Image 1 (cartoon, rainbow, N blue to C red):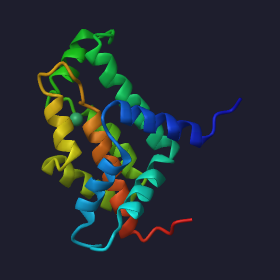
Image 2: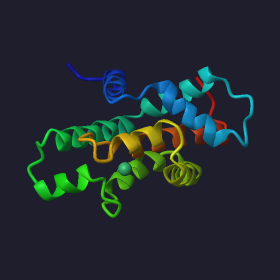
Image 3: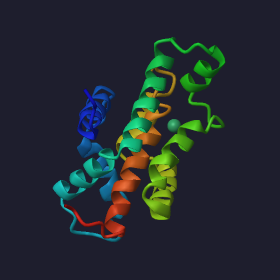
Image 4: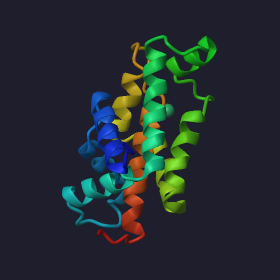
Amino acid sequence: MERDEKDYLEHCLALLKERGVTVEDIADCARYLQSGYHHSLKTEELCLSVLKVLEKREVQFAVMTGIALDKAAEQGLLPDKELEGLLMEDAPLYGVDEVLAYGICNTYGSIALTNFGFIDKDKYGIIRKLNEAGKGTGRCNTFLDDLVGAIAASAASRFAHNVEEE
Ligand code: MG
């Protein structure tokens, strides 16, 4: 049976939930990014925008890849122990976590990329929680915090681009 995008959407939502992230958490970050521009965005509109981003297959593949690496690192399952060490300490110069996240933003243009850079520095909401929970706790959120930031940045940029909802 061929898998369609809905299969991966459900799979990704389950993965995010398992790692402590809900659609509402990401929508809250998107609201924060858009707060200077669209004051009247409702939670449902923001959640819908997050789901639209998560419906894209390349976003789903980025989520699956990043979360698998985080989980493998914290379970001690990576074949390269040097890499495992870098992921476990969330080494600032590693940077591949951001590069994977850029892949998500690239689908939504330069506004998404700028939004991502901002929230990555600012570490608002769930992103701050994930970042703190992944430092010296045995938990690895090295990829997850950037994935969440990129999805929020993309969801926010959809409003800036006036993307029509179907
Ligand atoms: Mg990171």
